[in-house]
Amino acid sequence: KMSGNVSGNFPPFYEDEVGDRITVRSDEELKAMLSYYCNTMTEQRINGLLPDPLQIFPRVSAASDLSLCLCCFQINGQDIEYQEQLGHGNGGTVYKANHLSYKRVLAVKVIPLDITVELQKQIMSELEILYKCDSPYIITFFGAFFVENRISICTEFMDGGSLDVYKRIPEYVLGRIAVAVVKGLTYLWSLKILHRDVKPSNMLVNTRGQVKLCDFGVSTQLVNSIAKTYVGTNAYMAPERISGEQYGIHADVWSVGISLMEVHALAEMMGPPSSRDVNLVFVCFPQPLQLLQCIVDEDPPVLPVGQFSETFVHFVTQCMKRQPKERPAPNNLMEHPFIAQHNDGSAEVVSQWVSHSLEERRFWLGV
Ligand code: ATP
Ligand code: MG
Picture 1 (cartoon, rainbow, N blue to C red):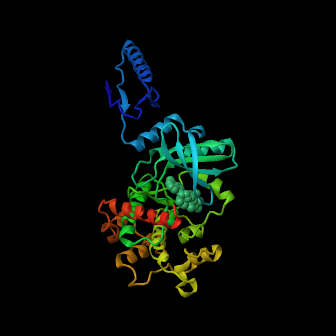
Picture 2: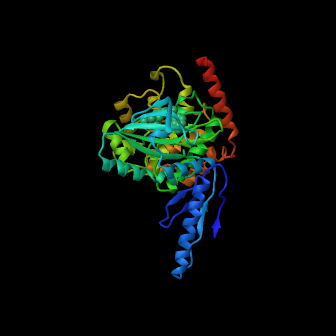
Picture 3: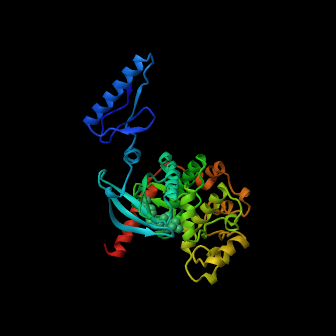
């Protein structure tokens, strides 16, 4: 018995005898699939067995379909046409790129890594879990490949970029962003994945109003290999991480608090750091060692009452409790008034704000 839709713009899939997904791209391949199935069916009948049904996986959505296609075809460097650089961080450089066969724009992160082939294989297998991530709040992963001493990680391109490049984000927009961030993290935690690198540059937005998390640490080997070359601490890390203690979900929660505080509150306060509470300046004016020491030693930052809404101040204060256990647990995060009041399912607010901000940026750049 065959089930599923075999038509559509994107290829359907079927599973072979060992459970591998086979992609069907043309009528020829469809015929090959059917004849393969008929042969196995006859064989099984001859042996007195009841043949297994043939399962065909239809198109679900363009994005998840493409991720399956690329996963089946083993994405590689030849299919990718690099365009402009989108930015670069501690470990690598991110490019906008076209996937030639699928005519789709991708973001490709290229990280130089001088490691053995064994370690390369380990990284590739650790990255496999990304194919299983299927959430509107998590960036879609299309595949990864090594060329010489560089790994390229291909993901969905977000035309609004990351939150760190925006001016102060008003609270009605930030609230919607916070909802997506919390939902994305809750999803990752449900898969037993800690994000480990929550910060504004890892929160991406697009003109459709979507907000997605990227760069979460699924591959220990990749994280370790990058950390060998670069310092692995940053101003968004919870005190227990900076001190080298054990950490868990609560460390991600701290980073959510400090990230939201930065893009909403700190971005608004201009002027020299000396005129402000020392605790408030540590993200805006990072001075690596003193900064990290400050997070460990000082009381967590508290926003001035009166300038920001009570629910926002309460939310970030709760997330940034020094004791990890005192920070909200996943279900409490969703129930917090700051999140609950903005959880209206509307993409319109973020969409308009991203489009408007991009237009403004183009105007100032004169393009
Ligand atoms: P770090 O290396 O410490 O994580 P980072 O997050 O700033 O720092 P990258 O992850 O290399 O560095 O990203 C560089 C920039 O590329 C980001 O700030 C973001 O603006 C852009 N970028 C990354 N991924 C995408 C994407 N999928 N779509 C659009 N822009 C992206
Ligand atoms: Mg990043």
